[in-house]
Image (cartoon, rainbow, N blue to C red; front, side, top):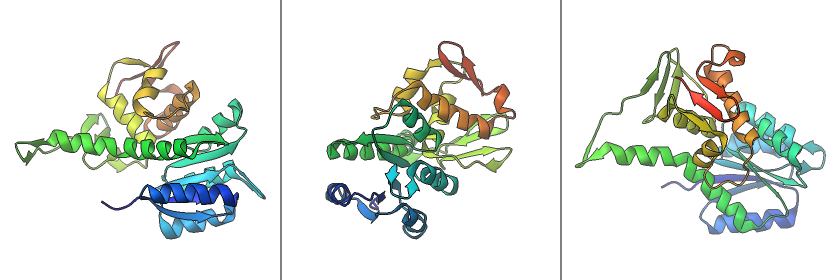
Length: 240
């Protein structure tokens, strides 16, 4: 199996060294930069599987940088922020972060978050591969079809009007979870527990922000959602 590549952007040399050593010890390939300006170039050259991004850097707004990176890449991003209040945490998610940690943090927790994120990304593939193996023979996968929207689990691909959609990992897993529970009203807490397994960044905004992003990509009119329907006081229902 290919080793995962992790890009760390952090100007605190001591923290950078500690995180880099811990992740390397876990078998990851680590690329590091000590300035926000270096991030886009390092992403382009090294094509990381995950970005650890400091929110507080000299001369660069880490959240703006997060948004910039998100516009050009679907690579998962974990933001490391100092003294993050509730508003800042919402902003992190809205700017494109998949998860966040508040400094100072235990490096073991960071490693656990990294592993949990990678596990969530590959979980769908592993489950599907296991399901498709019966007596040593693979079964032909059948895409989930909802009108002009299709989800091909084997290819990890979503298409709308037969055109591929560019979804972030969390968006894909959220959509797949909805699709597997079509017509069922599900609470935000349940959605979070199933889609964001292992993360402690739980709040209603985490789910709401990702639902909003999904609606912008799969709804004919995101302001009048017909696929992902809000159920007042409860959560959401996917009508397909």
